Length: 240
Length: 289
View (tube, each protein chain N blue to C red):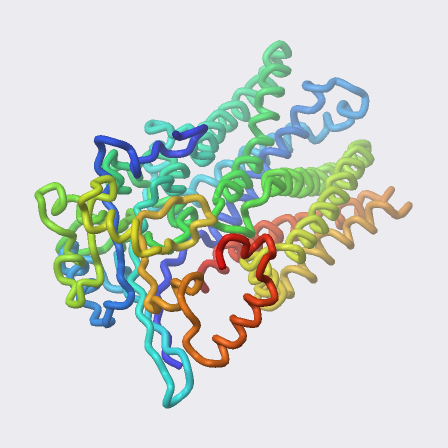
């Protein structure tokens, strides 16, 4: 239930759709096909992105690992950008999309300031082919495609099938099953935005460390000592 | 190690910190200009000689805000949209309405003053003063409501912005008073400025404690403020903007108009610098996300 000025929720509301995305980070290969597809779909200008893939290397040679993290608008169930927009140019669709009305946008950038996910940008005013410019833009979850029974462009093109899209309120949908069973995480949940892009972390063991056995002998030994020491305490009561 | 990310910076820049500064000063200048009619007390009546110039300055400052808003929004007509499509949960919408109403109050009050319509002056003065103080209040509120930016998300932000507007507006009127040789007004202005700079010091210390005891984003912000904004924070804001004016205002020397004006100029510099720093630095910690 929405209280005060919070947006009415779409997730978990019977009889309503709630579009959401699950990103399986174990499958992302950093090919950036999603970024290219999005750029092509919307003619997104140089220097700004509706979606991108963050890349980070960790470790030291030869034990290195490259991590990829696709990022886009989280289409929050309680979006702060909508609350702060002075003209209601940004609004939340009843099916969960957070959309932008260009004709109302005054480019005050309040929504950019309000967004904790760095998901919004200002379109340059001097565009040649698509004339929409000088306003704030963002990912729409490809509402125009989804409403015509197609997948968002980034999902359609994802090589590793890392991006999974669907109706979170439909118990039969893949996103519902994944969110229910995979222990997904969201970005900055402490901000109260209820983001609807869920991530499956790349390392299942680290993700499920609460119930997975430690891998190395040293870690196992440490864990056993820790369990022994804490057994019977309130925290571990009923777990071990 | 290779790392690639992208940042969409919310480009709230100098045009907005200047706007915050000017509109806040305009609000306080109007409060002081209307004080003789609103309060009618002997202390308020001492401001009578600076009434008209302070009102004119408020009007000029408001007029200067126009191009700044156009520069910020890109098109002149866009200013009307928050009023046409009023969104009650957005402080910016309320600010747009109040700004327009405040402008009207300044003009009507000036008209009343010129045509000597005493019955008009008091109600317009009261409404205009409240609207004038709502100018810095809404700018602070506009930052405060961004719950995702820890540097801004403090309930003290609108209070701080209002107090800074009181200081800078009073400093400006003190300068006018000195130029007009209205020495009678100086003790009143000195008292208002002394209190507001004192409150600014407490708010500064409060923010300091908030940073020192804060979470990850605030700690990051604190590092940023002390590195990228170190000079602005400690020299321009704290030393020139708060400490020096406070010392000047509490000294017996402050009986001299030049000292009050000097303190006022320092406080004006500090009031601009404080808000500019908060506005710009507040956008940055998220960049590292």
